[in-house]
Length: 282
Ligand SMILES: C[S@@+](CC[C@H](N)C(=O)[O-])C[C@H]1O[C@@H](n2cnc3c(N)ncnc32)[C@H](O)[C@@H]1O
Image (tube, protein in one colour):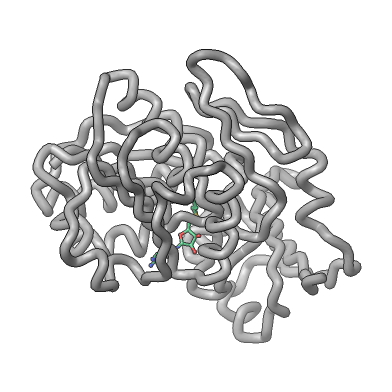
């Protein structure tokens, strides 16, 4: 059973959004992350992690926010929280836990995501936004030959791509534990022969240097997306589509500029909750 800590940070909405956006600087992999209205004007960011936050983390948050760290009693929190999660419908995609039945209709694509520790149960607006955008692309009749899911987390987008398209899918993540979870989910969803997995930081892997993809999902964070624009765009085939997510509305312009500078055309900008999802075409 993993030890878990809950970090509660109280501050203004903009302070907390800034912390949330830069979280990977401090924490390797937040297991869950929720922003709530507290006693207004204060907001509360609640983060669950599996490494004890150190003094460097607390001082890195800066002045002006209140921080409380609670060690959670040892029990399987992921399974606990999943009991209360309801299935998610995003266009034709229906994400459900192993305790729910798949949706059996002609046009539904069910994806089973059992409890796991990597990001992605389909409840986060960035994942849901990517699925909605993918659903829209499929509705336009697009067919793909090679698909990349960069920063796959629990593997939802890779599984959705493999189930919707008869094409090979490469799913990558910087986090080896996420890749282990994604692997189990890919097997659970019976797309193991279609999806390859690898641990890679951005595009820094030989397997990513020689292939072009006509659909790329990259649901990461604004900072890394801007940094990798110049190395990611060359992986996109002519007329290929790129879906970017993990950016707050106020970060969308900077991300948009970085990808427009690489010669991509923006097709759509979709907003879901606090997040913007961008679609580009090469
Ligand atoms: C917001 S989660 C998205 C997960 C999944 N794609 C989804 O939509 O549910 C971002 C994922 O990107 C991974 N990641 C962060 N930085 C990365 C990098 N430089 N290269 C590859 N993966 C990265 C994280 O480990 C995490 O699993």
